[in-house]
Length: 181
Image 1: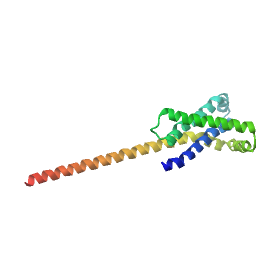
Image 2: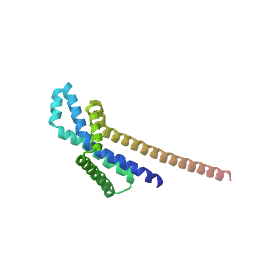
Image 3: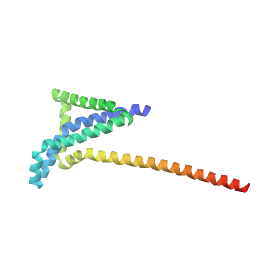
Image 4: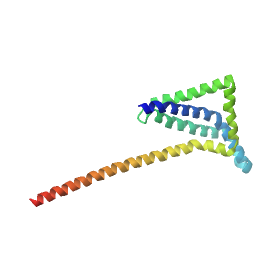
């Protein structure tokens, strides 16, 4: 319980930061990568530019999917219901929109600092890394989950094998004792 109390605010902070960042940076990263592709492969670049909204939607959806599936299960645990996860995601999304609107409305120094990070995404390699991150995280979570399930299965199998061996040894011992009488 104590560990959860300490770790939950950290997870919420990370989730909130990622919810804000995908809204601010995905469009810039997609534009940078598309422009970079357009330099080397103009026909594909033109095709990507004509479908820019769809590409931004797909990458933004990847972030939302990752955050809405991974973060609530970490914060709430896997046994919690869909409604609880929905309200956690809704709260994170709503707070991200509110903070983005507040920062945009007041335009003080903090918004300039946040938007200064957008220059990082003018580098096509950093933009590709940013756009790849949700897919890599999903892959990592999937691999981790499969390994965990495999270890659990192996643990159960070894316990079962040990039980069967003990039962077999006990049966042999009982038969030896019967035959010695």
